[in-house]
Length: 386
Ligand SMILES: C[S@@+](CC[C@H](N)C(=O)[O-])C[C@H]1O[C@@H](n2cnc3c(N)ncnc32)[C@H](O)[C@@H]1O
Image (cartoon, rainbow, N blue to C red):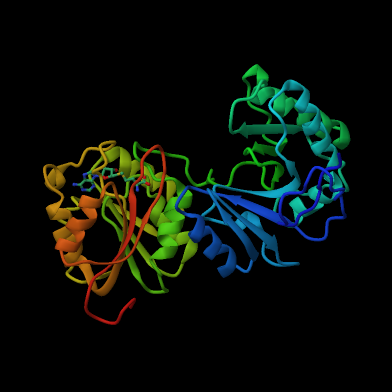
């Protein structure tokens, strides 16, 4: 059977079809937190990265615009891949692993390496020369008579041979050297899909995040919240419980012409936020979110995941009740202002409504084993979205 090495989103090829064809354009797959698929699709369109062709569970497929901006700049995705080859899912026996080797054989590795560089990945590759090595991460649904390492090795060895480079097997339990090309294989019961990561390391790992604190936010989720807030040049943006500063840093990267202020009570959070935000125009200070050193109505946008999800203790005026947090939020936010917050359950969303915030958008997301609500609240008055 021949397998498909195309970058198009056509229905899965049948066993009988002989579909290998030249690569015309880059077909990309952005992987993300469940619940952020629409936010990722929106960012792809806003940045002019290409045309969205499919929204699935935790993934968004798109075709890259020729000579458009690079997909490596996506902030709301965990990672972005080039679709390398696809075929119907294989069977469940060890013999079926041969079909994975054929899948790897069908990938147009030279073109993939060129497209990877065009999309902002590692460069300096003439054809396939210069590829430092191959590593593969596989996952599958359903019971199989082989394990993930068997599947990874089946494709990894073929890819390495074709690229004339080494293969790092995860079987030994050690991570691959950082410069190795990262391939991903998924067997979802319907399709076997082989993809090539564009960047050296996953997009969600941010270079700025050198310091962390318990409960710190996943950067792509913080980026989605910042984009949802509609921050404009000149806006004053506040995170009253800033932790390691992720929300303000992502917001600052998205809209550098706003002013950013973060507060926290914990010295370790303040240290982390200052360390991560070093060199960025973000002020960080010690204050209780229930009693902020800010004038009435001086804030245009609030971004926050407050400390009531059990992972982080609410301290000071917030211990015992979140009421002071909402009251203070209402006081400092300008009429017509907006707060984008991550709340652990529906009761907290109702609490915001009781404090006369108007929910404009409520979205459940799945992150770190929890399913909090991402809520965009407006404060009535002023001009909408001002
Ligand atoms: C869930 S964490 C925020 C994480 C942050 N968004 C990040 O990405 O790192 C909640 C933060 O609230 C802080 N906190 C707890 N009680 C507070 C209070 N009364 N005032 C200000 N900050 C408080 C904690 O120290 C913690 O850093």
